[in-house]
Length: 137
Image (cartoon, rainbow, N blue to C red; front, side, top):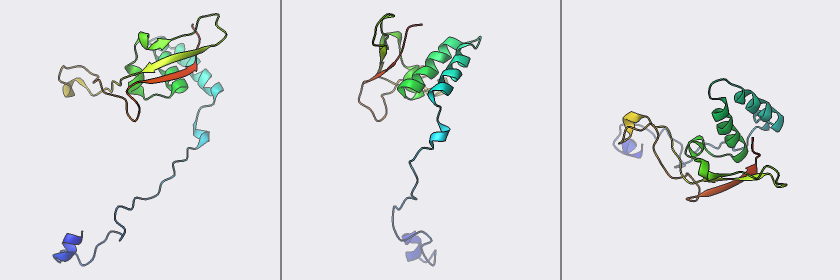
């Protein structure tokens, strides 16, 4: 803008004087928009009862709710990345290992024609271990 003013294309700079001043936004989260544990349990129960893909979607959304990874990190998980507690164990915490992400980019945009592309984790170490409540079903 200063260039345009200097060369008399504009009379004055229409932008504010402070450079790089981004508008202030609130990073607070409205807790009314979140699911409470009872709502999450009802929703996950409903998803599990769906005739097509219910168990798979239940596992996906339960992992998203309890461990808070990104969707592409859940898609990249393998059975070997999950350690469930023994059925009779007093401690019912499980371990989930997140080491890569597989966002869906479309087969037209990958070199090998695959729908997903393997990438590293965003804003996290190369491998992240999450602990969450879990039981065998």
